[in-house]
Image (cartoon, rainbow, N blue to C red):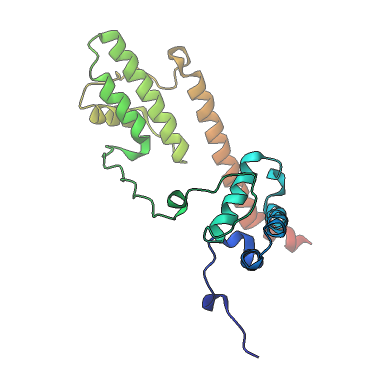
Length: 221
């Protein structure tokens, strides 16, 4: 007995329906009576809805199934369908055009592209008070971003230097400016830092218990 492998068979246009549906479609094409062929086509559609039964009552989904039935028959199926025959040109598979990869360079990827755009926009500002606000906002964001992606803490001096370098000296925060200062609007920042440190401390304790605590427990047992 010779076994037929799928690799030796004709490729399926819609593999999600399985080869059994494909054979049913071929059988529909062999039926001579149009009325019986149309009735059988409706039964095949009912079987195709078993893939996504939650959508079977959606009109758009029903039309999609009939379109697939026509396409699987290579547009040779002639039945009384509740929907028009799909456009062959639009149904033909075409390889989509390749999306262009963004080529813009980010000075510091830790803080993302939006901060770079924010800094470039701030360079257009001339009002000293607004520039100061831009500097403080950017500094807060940078510290939050750094702590979000790094378990270690970062000093305010490091943030000052990075901000100055990224903005080409346009944005600066003075040495007296404290990024953890609640009065300066850093209440959220301060709570975030506390939660971050607490989480890191709990992780270290968990690892320590797993490494040593478990052994002591089993030794006592």
